[in-house]
Amino acid sequence: MPLTAAARIIRNARHVTAFTGAGISVESGIPPFRGTEGLWNRYDPQSLEMSYFHSHPRESWEVIKKIFYDFFGEARPNDAHRALALMEQHGLLHAVITQNIDNLHQEAGSRNVIEFHGNSQMLLCLDCGARRPAREVDLAVLPPRCTCGGVYKPDFVFFGEMIPEDASMRAFREAELADVFLLIGTTGEVMPASLLPEEAKRHGAMIIEVNTEASNYTTRLTDIFLEGKATAVMRGLRTELLIM
Ligand code: APR
Image (cartoon, rainbow, N blue to C red):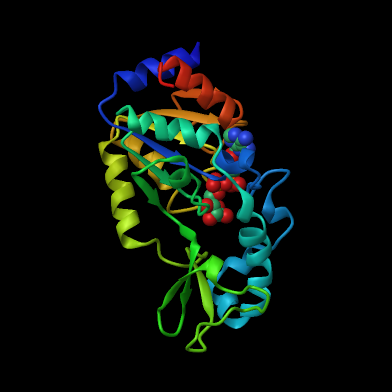
């Protein structure tokens, strides 16, 4: 039974790190980017490219608002986010590296969260560098502007932007230290985040993967594939780990 085997490996591990993607938040009502219901089937990913944002801030913000501010508003953590927080509280998980910008791991109670692509909660003024909580900024007029007149950009990583230095260093350090890397809900499509499971494997980690379908990792890297929705699988893992 793969769940029992996964729980035994996690219980006996020295350093477990989780690596999550959009799939862990799907059951919180946030669509994934790829796949049949993927956001990139409905919106053009160029809206999140730095060059396009600079030249078409209003058009870019119209898509950004629909995807990240109209959708995300009411999303709440689900049992998969909560299971990871519980594992951390019981000393069975050292950190969560997330590609998501929805803040749901923190809201579920996880404390050591490495946000590889930043977070949608704050806006950053491209002129004066001021940061404001997105909820305090009126998004009725786009692009939203800072009091200095500069255009606000969401403080998450756009295509073509560098990964925040601190997040990158901490994430790759986790990949070196982990003897178990728990992948949840990611296609493994986007570099450099997608390199992290490869790095973990190269340093000898066991790869446990939770996904509703095969990803870029499943045949190449994954040692135990727990097929299913993140909430159902993580509820099962929590039970096998005897943590409530
Ligand atoms: N439970 C578990 N896995 C799921 C579920 C679910 N309920 N629903 C979907 N999935 C899986 C899909 O099978 C897919 O493998 O989640 C994954 C979602 O893949 P993507 O949408 O590509 O998300 P992600 O891998 O996080 O994308 C990486 O791409 O657009 C950029 O910056 C964006 O961080 C994002 C990055």
